[in-house]
Length: 570
Ligand SMILES: Cc1cc2nc3c(=O)[nH]c(=O)nc-3n(C[C@H](O)[C@H](O)[C@H](O)COP(=O)(O)OP(=O)(O)OC[C@H]3O[C@@H](n4cnc5c(N)ncnc54)[C@H](O)[C@@H]3O)c2cc1C
View: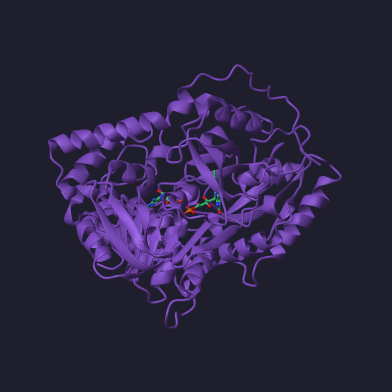
């Protein structure tokens, strides 16, 4: 059914990919690939997408989860990027995805009495001025020291010289990516996960599709397409070289680590952004948690599961403790996660020119058309995915015979955005109609927008699905079933890491919820006892590996005393 990614329909989706040539085959199911599939399908093209693991399993579930212009990029003089990103932020908050993208205030503490306020203030005036005319998020404000401490009592009061408050927006990145993919499916795209493009099909120099390996069965099949679009982020160089493609860009990987903590660890009613010697550190409110990060270090290891190290954890704690009155310790940390920024290298590594540190590389995207029939994109930011998708599809279809309409995604709200104000106002009625608590109805509306009724329909059929998945978290069992029947989840990891976020929100990385998740999935996917045991073991191993950085002993270098000086670069 269009708009529904039912894991039980995977075989028929594979069949659809292989019968008759597609106009566009998208390789990669992160936000860029999902966005490209939506862009192309909503122009009326026949589209397929293959993703080697799960939607958003790469960088797109491991970001800071901000939809923002990026104050830091303003300081680096990246005005075009900031302006574009702010306009996108406003479009997503106000029209395209108000159910998923929400404004969030950030407090920027000031430490240099005379010089810093005018400097930061001017930056924020510019930041606000770069938005469009309709402003879905409030203007920045100046705060006195007392005002700053009232909003963020967690800050160390000594040397604090006031603060600024400005607004950006936040998103559940994995949920957003799945919703974009579902919206693409709503417009006819065929989406197949656990399917890797292993090489490109060629007719002379022209690319005519890809050889795809079904990672569930090991079987390979050909997918023919007039155009192939490569959206594989940090895997770009691998995908290009597997088919002997010399692309005009290379990707450098920069690892970013975040710590997740309970809200009680840091007393503040707003998010915070503080300067570090290398970059900035965000304290991002995340329901009943904080996400604190990030780091920015060159990476050349495993692309699929980049590991956070003990040093990464210590670095974040150390930088956070420079500004906090009560120092954080490892005991405060619930979870840690790492992601890889796909930064477009400039200049290419083989030129021998000294490379810039990854903190200084531009976050703009690059589109390349290295061969007829092939377009490839990397770089950019989650926030600007829609523009990236538009640009790469434009490049891919430029010489298709017959006219292709321009991108329409700027006028296309994502699934779940429809009728949102009325749905939000109806939480109590929905609760009584479906016999669930108002908290459950409100939670589902919060995460699925107007699609909440689809989850509630499952709960109506099986009352047990209305029960909490695990104590202390708002998720209900129906969300697990929905992840399979509507959101294409094939394994427990897909559910616990990306459809609900227990991998990063719970202190055991979702391990205690895993048996229930496997039981619900088994009922829908027909898993026998052996398969259930294998799925459970697979998830528990995954959860244990994710928690490893927190178990590693602290590095010998001591954490700074709470009285250490705040480093505020001029
Ligand atoms: C630490 C960190 C913080 C960030 N914070 C922000 C932020 O707050 N705001 C913001 O706007 N941006 C942020 N970003 C950037 C943003 O997350 C990325 O730009 C974006 O997620 C990249 O998406 P992508 O689709 O290009 O790559 P990915 O999400 O990595 O997707 C590529 C996909 O391709 C698949 N793939 C690879 N090879 C193949 C193959 N052969 N066949 C099929 N599929 C394949 C992979 O499995 C993967 O799912 C952050 C990034 C990091 C690392």
